[in-house]
Image (cartoon, rainbow, N blue to C red; front, side, top):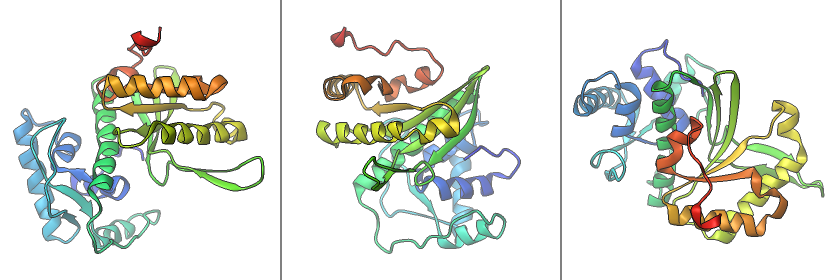
Length: 267
């Protein structure tokens, strides 16, 4: 998605939730009410807007609140309703209608989706605070996915958590983003990386974009960063340079081009 400053906040919130699936009150406050002088004011304004949209039947929140380990206290998790999607589709035919599952999603799914939302929020905050960065594209799933064929002819789908394009002065940076929460085994991480290598070998992205995006793993802490970095270097031989592993705390500086990413232990 490209950020659209030309429509009102309510429609932006609906459009964003149609793409991201889930977002907390705190995340929406940071996205849409950043002009507030204080964070508490931004959250109050966000709550007012969301309650108005909820009364109109356009959004709903999950029954349970979720803790704010990174930014703020616990808050509701919001999603767009089918009625909200129909409202958007009346104005934009590209909006995809999908029916809501009558069961609440698992905690693991919610937390992973919110982690991807957090990456978008931090990307936009970084762009807002930079004089040289501009956000061109941020694609959530499934828009971030890529179809390709293995050498055997079997059809495959690469499923990045997100796809990002930034303009940094005269340069464009392209990223496939994988958000890790230390819930997957290292073997599964390596297998995911092997799918990127298959897609790289297909040449599809290079023909379409003239470059192959950085594959950026964003992880919770330095311990996990070192473990994944070592597994990639050990298992992926000549292809390990396709992948970069950083912590969430390093993300903003990294997309600005400002960190040395080589772990001391691996030097």
